[in-house]
Length: 147
Image: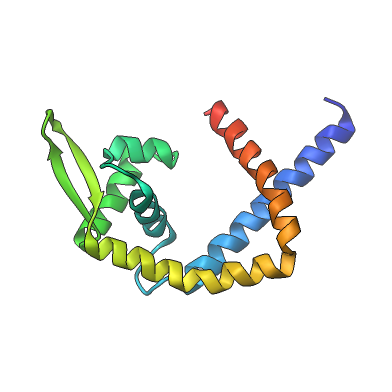
């Protein structure tokens, strides 16, 4: 890798880290009271899932430890946003699904963040957003392959 390529790579990742911080801060400000970004992420994932997920599957999806995912799921279960049940095939395991209250909380979060993300996308420009998505997806896939 040339020195120019190294500088370019560092600049790219510096921008990605800065955007990540700004996005997290902006979303946390508008999410419904008591909802953390990690809660929204899990609820959004479960809302799009066709089936239940195990805590281990969720931890792998979000690149978290099982302990961190267990903590998030415990908070979501306490709030009534997810159902956690034993796995009927292996009683040592659990399965997680989104509850109707969790779906409503996720929908409220989507309603709260949509004006923010729509405004940013409009200011950046639709063509720029369309152009950025393939690169960001490719970066995500390449980084996921390394873990």
